[in-house]
Structure formats: structure tokens, C-alpha cells
Length: 115
Length: 115
Image (cartoon, rainbow over all chains, first blue to last red):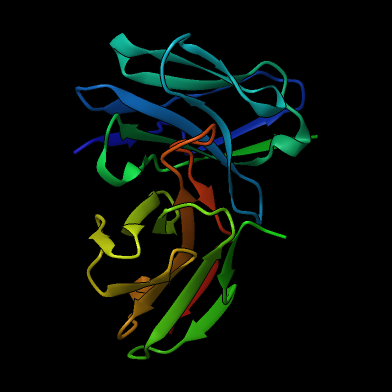
């Protein structure tokens, strides 16, 4: 079975700092990759997704992620964060053709941006 | 109006009680899912459904049951609630076609506390 690791559980940074959140997965085949964000008190929303093609994916709100197949990684980045980026971020994976599109989530990274 | 709704949003109950959480969607998606979220563990899949006649267990189905009453409705039941089922529960939907293919859309969550 596949698994997803997010190594940073908590990140604290100041506004305008750069953000990079790590995500590694274990699965030998082709996968779809997702980053979701959960703002305080809200439901999960999709930031970006990768299915195939250009490994550098741009999402909403200035986020981007790079798929590095050789490293089984899909790290999320934002060059300059804002206070409103305070949220919990989840990486998720599902193998191509997986029955039921079952997503496997990482444990999440809580990001606090100080004004 | 929200595309995926959940009721109730908050529930406090006692050990041994039967609880039902309900999910409705207006997205017209055929696939629906129930997850629970626990701090540091991300989201874990409880049950998923391809369509009204197709129900499947996820990774943590013990102690839970589901009912897909219609394409738009998917209920989760705890037959006899126990304290370690205290968690945030999310319903999600997805489609197998179109521009939103394989993306999961989440409801606002139900916070369940079992005393």
C-alpha cells in the first residue's frame, strides 16, 4: 500500500518569507499527486494537482509544486507568504487507475505566518 | 450554496450511543467518500462508494457502517460510539470525467466528540 510522509509537522515563519513543504510518497507505479489546504475552521480545498506532463505545477494563490519522480517527492513552494497563508497543508497521492480514486494523505503540516 | 454539505456540524454524544452523520452533494458526482481527521495523522479513508450499489471499505472501517441512499446522499453511522472515535469527519465527492476528474471535493466537516 502507498504511504505519504510530510516531514514538517509545524512551520512558523514571517510574512514575505519563502515557504517549502516537503512531501514524499512510497509507491512504485505512476501516481496522481495533490496538495490540499485547510484554513482555520474550513474544509479542505485543492491548491494544485499533478497528473502528467510538466513536473512544475502552478496552483492557486501563488503556490507551486515540483514533482521529482526519482525522489518520489512533490514539494510545495511559495516565494513570499502572507498572513492569510496560515493553514494546514496536506499532500495526497492516488495511483493511476486506483479503484475508487482512493487518496492517501500525509499527516499534514501546520503553517503559522506571523504578521 | 455549498456543493457538499454535512449534518450535523458538531455533535457530542456518549459512549455506546448510535450516531449518524449525513452528507449531501449537488455536484452530480458518482463517487463519495468518508474520512476521519486526527491531529498528526492527516485524513484516513473509512468507506467509499462508486455508486448507489457499490460500497467499499477503506483503511479504517471497523466500528463504522455506511448507507448510500441516493447518488447525492451518503451517510456514516457509528453503531456504538466509543471515545477513540472522537475526530473530525469529512465527506468528499469526485467524478471520473471532465476537468475536475479525480479531484475530491470536501464538505465542511462534522466535529464528533464521544464522552
